[in-house]
Length: 118
Image 1 (cartoon, rainbow, N blue to C red):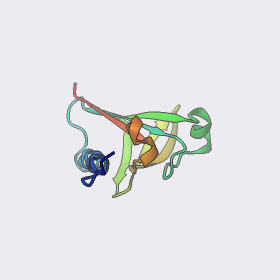
Image 2: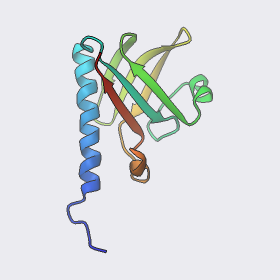
Image 3: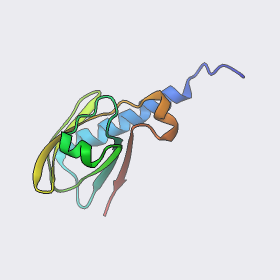
Image 4: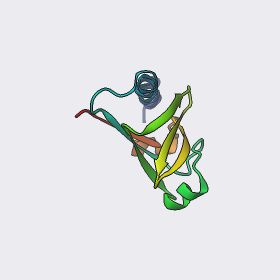
């Protein structure tokens, strides 16, 4: 088998991270226009993900959050985002790594982002 000197897998992973950071940073700075919203799915126990024990018990494997109207204090850094959301009337702070783990890249990484406009 030929050696991949270009490392397309690394280029694709870095591009996905960049897209995620860019759209979340824009949402943090300007909010979401109109009916735009993000569905963000991530592995609950992935490295860099921090959930309360209550949420982890409720979503032990995977969690999907929707960022649209009712989120606050969205903060985006090079390697993670943090956001405030309400679950069943209880305010929670989520920390989610934007790092894609090599072994999970085949299944779209640890985060799937769907952007929808109304």
